[in-house]
Image (cartoon, rainbow, N blue to C red; front, side, top):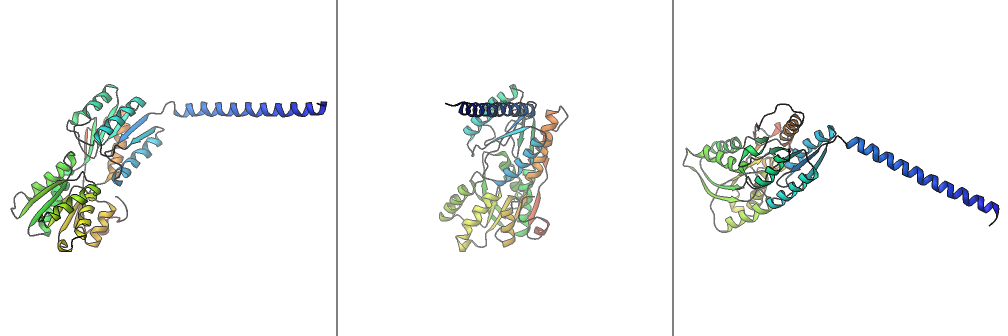
Length: 323
């Protein structure tokens, strides 16, 4: 090898080493910057009973924006209506070192042990949308006025109809549903012309409610009114009724105020829905979260108002989105 070749080889090796040193230095600086940017960040866990309902997307988005704005991080898990999975996922988040947990329990009493563990670890607990059986296990519970939602719909049924044979679609393991049905029952209790003929537990899920309503129809169940714990169940009732022209006069009532429900009210397929406001729940949860973490006073129970949406006041609401 000539001296010129040796010189070129030395130059190439030197350049290669210089590039490696530069890359290493850059990566180490990036790591140091990353550590600096997250060393004071807190991790916030979130687990809603299911993420196939846009209601929880809207609620969670309000919290996520606030969490990230505070320089903290958020981890979200979807238990898919499986309480065992929810317990496992929360245990995993506890092992990750979360500072707080925002949760909608799949069942009202299925999280007792894991929430006890969370409290012993100093994790703050905010329950949203429905209550725990033992509300003392949560630092704060934030819900819509679920009893009022059911009561509001019951009163409206009595205004619109001279009588009612009411099919109820509920979610037996959710206290929010129990309160909504209790509100309905209280509203109609003084008038024997309005009777509940059947209660069907559908977990508030379209794909579960639809075949159950269809089965009840096929069995010859007689009803002229459907009270639904949420708008997803209401959509299922509307779909079932569409398949049976003889039931075209059956009236469907929901709870949530979803865009789909408002569209069905506009088309005349649903009579009304008692609207709750997931963005407000999320904002309240985020505000309470940081009051807790900053050592400020906060309310242990927050109950947010609901509003009736029907064809007469539909123009007050944006039909294309949640309020």
